[in-house]
Image (cartoon, rainbow, N blue to C red; front, side, top):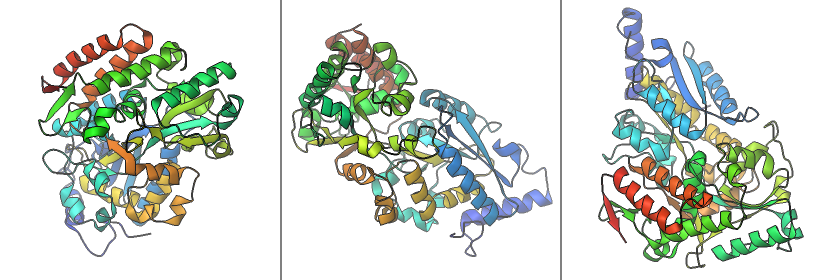
Length: 470
């Protein structure tokens, strides 16, 4: 194992700060009292807070962090790691984390942050810039540029270390496709090709859900990113000018009233109006993503699923939903652009980062834990266990990574066609407005035109009227 910052003979600035803090604690036990909430203010314990799966049978993160904890404590005698899991759906997890970060009494030393929310927490002053640590960490140069930028704020400083990324595409059941007369090597070229396949499944394979597209507020960011943005970023306007269909970088304003937005909503409306998707009550169940992975796909009750690269983590041995032959049963296809226009494929990428709260009691110890957790060996282990996409170049080039699991090569190749959400503080509110628009056309409470108009109004409110039309 590579020495961590705590054991390396080369003492970096953050190591010296850590040693000094330890000396102060020994010399004057009361000096550090009240500095933060990490592990009860114990200067020798790093408190790590993370999102725990709501599915009791899936403990990928718990297992991984438990192993890193053992490595860290063995390599650093006298230092301890306290794992603090937060078991909650994404939206609830974000809320709980923000509440914790507000006070030194509750702030952990290290926190797991979704890249879509990190800029909001940065703007709120909840996170600590990591540039001083990163400058002294040689492994940081191994991370790909897009990943390094994922946790960079408008002030130019970096606030998190990514632990992988993801891409998205179409999963389909080959047995269901065979019954519907569809090819096992299916690769739709347009949105209409997807709808045609779903309609064929509905006609010829009763009792199964033809197509799942996440929608509505209960699904949270899954609806926005796996559903809506996979459509929006493949519309004519998005691919013609190469710009972001949600945000205009030149004017630094959010886009309203676009045709692409309405076209994406119309696709969602079609899926649920024609009953090609799950029952509306199921689609608006907060646990729909867990049900898709744990029940609908393994049980052969879903034909096509627009989803992420990480699904196989739920099907690994010991996961509780072990499905050893999933790669034989399921096919993979890239999401096409709206009309097949160049570049022909669409994906969205996000991911999570490890960040240090501004009010953390033990930031130096926290970064030393990051160094252990994000070594090449541990990073590769995590990417494989989490069905993630490598953000370290040395891991991506490692044959052991590429061959570790079926589908990794397919989803890694999609990085060439991927897009990233506008990483600005207003994005979480924009995302919620998108979910509301999706939900209203899913239930039929609003037409596409009405839902788009309501979105434009919500967008203006969410961004302080920083909106451009067209």
